[in-house]
Amino acid sequence: MEGILRANGRAWTLLVNNTPIAYAAILPVPGLPGLVELQGFVASARQRQGYGTHLLTHIKTELRGTAVTQLSYPVPHLHTPAAHFLLKNGFFIEHEEWMMELTMVNGQWSLVNGQWSLVTRHLPLATAIPLFCQLYITCFTGLPWNQPFTEAEVAGTLRRSEDMLFLMEGDTPIGFVWLRPQTDRSVQLEPIGIIPEKQGQGYGRALLHIVLSQLATQGVTAVTLGVWANNAPALHLYQSLGFHQTESIVYLAYDVNRQN
Image (cartoon, rainbow, N blue to C red):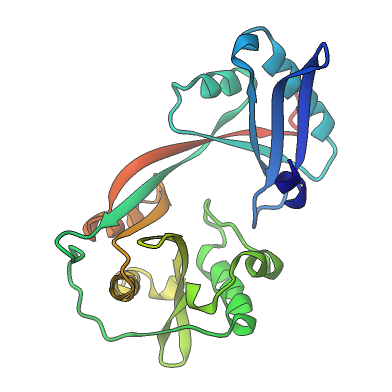
């Protein structure tokens, strides 16, 4: 509960005879003002008795007219009880994201066309953070997966300059990748971007080759990333490099200020 409040979230508990039987919370999604991720549960003995609907209806009513405009809830597929419940209560499919993974085989990445001579660079945080925000807007404005981080949001998460890598053409930054260590041997890449005028020319592939080579020297043996299921160019690139889908996440959404 304290963690949720520290992250500017909110939480609700439903009591029956002074006993908590259901819980829900919302957490802001960085880079998407107004969007919050919903989480919660109803005690198994109290499920299918209307308590979840009662709590969700209360939350919807309480959030109307606030800065919150949309609730989001990720499910692994549409056949889960949570998905059935939310779709019945006004949620809709907002997008589907695939989680991809590349693992080493016999100590090597199975890569194609791996010879590149482009320069990558780490920059001090004071330079890296505003540059990342600027490049992100350049790369993704107008696209469905655009999530324009503020400098404060990046500063709150990016602790080490070595976790942000910029692809340089001469002295001009043309791409970036944010490395998010998961374990000593696993790293998530999120997000990855190449400026529009350089897309489709192999720069994204080059950046990934460079990053993977550097991670291999650090003992990393598995790399993961997320990609929208309808982002065909990115999917083609990742699959051509050997990434394979490990899971699918369907994001259900509810527009808080909708007219019922």
